[in-house]
Image (cartoon, rainbow over all chains, first blue to last red; front, side, top):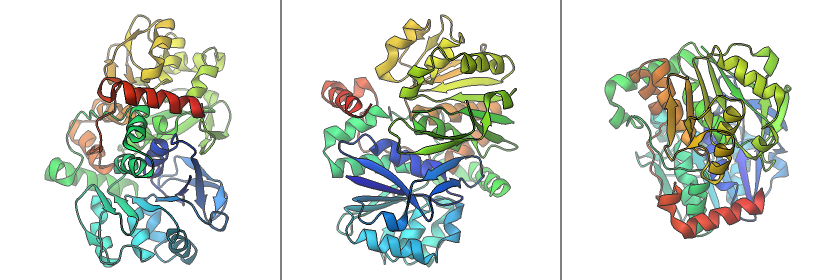
Length: 212
Length: 212
């Protein structure tokens, strides 16, 4: 099984690394990081470099596609090379998936027409503009269309566990959960806008603006 | 505030990226990835390259130190350069922390003498050998010693949220949780050995051996 994870400048690292880490130990599986050109890309703040190993034209028929988000997505919404590649690989993939604002790229490629989808909570309006229907579900599955769409950043781990189950079996998927010891015990319960409330949400918006 | 994240060959990417992603948007904060030499290191399976931006001797007094794990840790348990650096930066850091088998390096550096600590569930024995006292707590805090030790892989996110609270305030830490939308909804409940049970644990051990 070949899993392709898309990388691009100014991505959010955890969007890509969460699913990668959860899926990389599936049996008989190879993970390839793919992008416009081989070499390093930097996260949105420039702090972390990640390596693209293959260009889009070198990865023609992956079984699974994972598209992360990040502020860099906004520069790619009309990127013909990437959007053509997404349409092309989706024709034969078992599952084409996204995390966070990665769903805006799937929508821009026409893969979510009139379908429920999610993204990072701060970018829900953009989904509507691109023809999808925003929902607050953390992981949205369209099994008939072979797309799975996860909400912001860390939700890619939840998505990947479900994907592992679809690709293998439940015991193997649970083994993946144990391998990454995903037994969440956050010290607070502020992981969604509803749970966080207005004060924390305002603080988050303030901090977004400071860095992005 | 300067946060140093250690990278080395054959690390587990999520150990490093989980805390990085959770802490990178703290106000007035810079994150630096540090290692033996500048340039790319590869994860344990070789699938992902991450960039070291500064060498150990270029990072002299970080406020926070994060040490990830990975199978590559086993090659570093007597690495004088790394262990000396850990001892040196811990003398002035506000917090010296680890995720997964990263705690074996803290223990090897003498930073956990007779103290409770945790690590990936498959490596608990190693902690004892290195003079620490294994516990199944997901995030172990020694505030007096300024060390915080997280269990396997994904636990670094939980640890980082607690660290964010210690470094700033609870509202800001909760804003971090919202930014990475850490509202965990795993499809299974198999994230610890006790919860996973013997069948899933056996499958996990089998898959570890297949790839490592």
